[in-house]
Amino acid sequence: MTLTEISTSFILTLLTDCLVMVGAISFFYWLNASTAAAFVVAHRRPLVILTGCGFVLYLLARIVNTLYTQPIPPTPYWSALNLLVITGYLLNLRLGFRWQAPVAAGLMALCYLIFGAPWSLIGGLAVVVAAGALYWTQTQHNTQQRLKRYAGLIVVAAAVLTLVSQFHLGQYDLQFWLRQVGAMLVLGALCLEFDQLMDTTRQRTDKMHALTTIDELTGVHNFGTFNQRLDTLFTQFQKDGQPYSVFEGDLDHFKQINDTYGHLSGNAVLRQLALELDAFADTLPFPATAYRLGGEEIAIIACTTLNHQQAMQIGERFLELLKLVRFPDADPNLTITCSIGQAHVEKGDYSANDVYKKADRNLYAAKQSGRNRVHAQ
Image 1 (cartoon, rainbow, N blue to C red):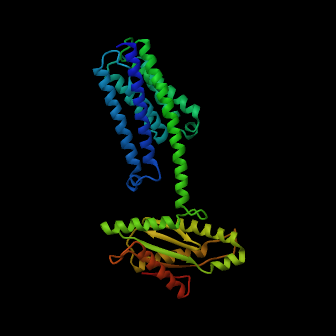
Image 2 (cartoon, one colour):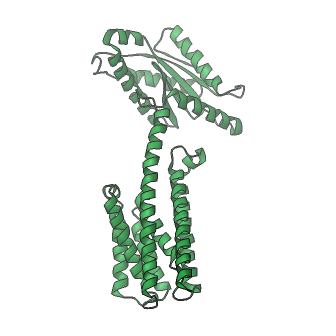
Image 3 (cartoon, rainbow, N blue to C red):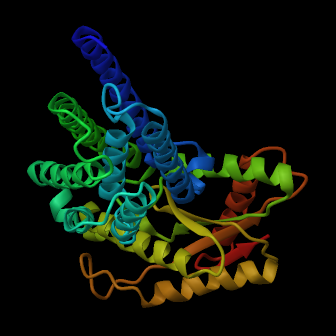
């Protein structure tokens, strides 16, 4: 091949590699986004591992094909090797599994033996250095600093290229190594910067998503999330009969707290109540989530089958808990009570709001019958 042909091939291959890595990084962050599809969110961890391992295996297959089928030296450079090094390094940074470094070292040593390179001190040191650099860059402190991320990638890339050079030592000219190292530097810098950009974007997106789903005052899920969850559960119930219940609560005489202690103290009471409600939901022996519906209204959605007695027991347990809660930011001697209504989904319900309406009617019945009590379906 002429120099012009080699240069053109080099540039085209490098551009292709850049596009491949940008797409792979974007897909990885889509899997980890809080706004991803419900199926992705529910199966995020295995999906990330499977797609990451699948991409790595694909690159390994390309490397094997290159080393066995292309002439020596290959033209224009080991494209898949650069992609593999950078992919492995980025997965190491973002996933942070402790087994990644020893597995990477084992794969490097296995490849070294498979391709028949004579074992040497240089090859052994390359494996150890690469694994050590991967392990070092897993700490949160290191991954948040740009220079340390670059240093880690440079060390890992240098160790891998040193190891691979042992496969056909002396059969590659200076121009080949300049293309190989140059492509690694360009691709590595692009990927590290794009990865950092995507991570920053994901954090901002997650923060914005949290602002739209979390009640700003109390920190529990808000009314919009409550409605979305009801829609999801009702759709699921129509498909497979998955049951769920809604507990709706309303603090008794909360206006008197605001009038007596002021609205700031009233807000402190609501925050403390939300913490207790969230902790209480976590103690239940089935999936349950706490919500603030607005004002002094709270709710729990419980994904389970509950009869009248079980629902009453759960509601009364929460009322007993409230007797023990104190509110030092308002008045250490202040105690509050709550009225609770409960309802569960039934085959005769026509919409997601039907369960909420039944719980609301039962809450009203609890208020009418004297407050500080539970009225369950």
